[in-house]
Image (cartoon, helix red, strand yellow):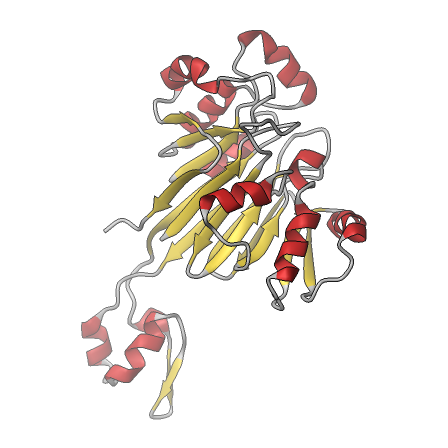
Length: 302
């Protein structure tokens, strides 16, 4: 299972009814956050979710509307008596940027581990999450992220019995561990079927449309993508500042074959995103004008 909450949907500046960009994902007792704009803690408080189990924070890039909420968040984590290491992932310069922000949060009871992205595409496994970072096209280095929860194949009882494995060894093999029995090593692939379809969420903001976004979002259960402008007359502005319109995001969703599209990262001038969804849904019917606090529980298929 994978729980998703879009904490903030605003771009550039917070509004009384819209906090800045942030996403939170939960699975298997672990939480992952992508971006931490101003107001993230307030948005998080409104959901009832806790900041304490956050093991990973990823950043798309280092514009203020995507990272300005970090110092306060770190202090809250420290006040919650966290001692476990916190992994941070982002483009080159991550450690320098975070340490600069920590001028106002200098003492923390937990270490920060930095993973700076250098390649166009990178894969990182952290807890239950398999994360793929991919470089996109903004006016500073910027990455999108695909977040997957893999699912093992079914346990083959007949194979286990044919191998003569006692019942107490079945569970470790199901969980992916090798076991030794009567001087021989048994591996999970000896008793497990082919991997089954897992869960996948792709998050992409602050970029022009690119083929890599379609490739990385392919067959996602949920595609969360910026739709900064809904007004047709702002297409040129989107190109100039390397952002996307709602219609461009819908085209990407259709090409990638995703199940559902949430639009986010709205311009402050876009007061009523829903007003433009008629045209968006003509391109991709499964599009939603996401709001702060939008949640979804993703479950494995039977």
